[in-house]
Image (cartoon, rainbow, N blue to C red; front, side, top):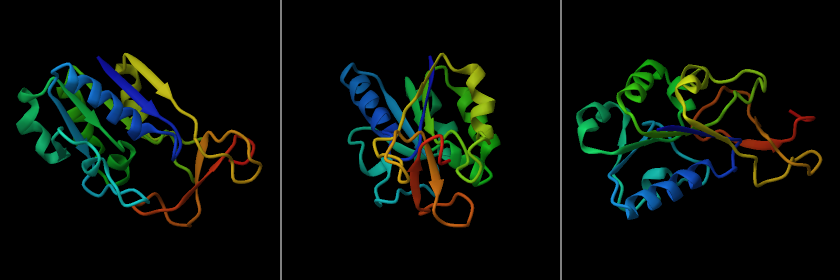
Length: 169
């Protein structure tokens, strides 16, 4: 089974992954977590610092480990596209029958431009969840469905975001 989780910044995407990993590990499943090599959160904590019993590796290590795990979890999948590793990610995604992927849905400089990684994998997903932000829109206080950059550079590690509603995207 392949499942996708998306949503804006601060919507709980990684939390959903961690919760799922913990449940599956308690059932005896062997889970591998994969993160982009350059991934770090604004709060300084990445998935590798949060999960306890699950090995966390980078994309280049996945091929050697594919026969040892029941499920693979990919976090921050939009960063593979940003850092030019989309084809490598798609290759790894295709190697596994059971995986969960998580990442931003759209480029926050253009709210209508969906990251290509999602366009490539959605047809292969068995389930899909789109979360909304736990933080309100910074302009009106309404429900935030989008992340917006507060800097002028493209998506990079350490960028700063604010959450906005549909009207203010």
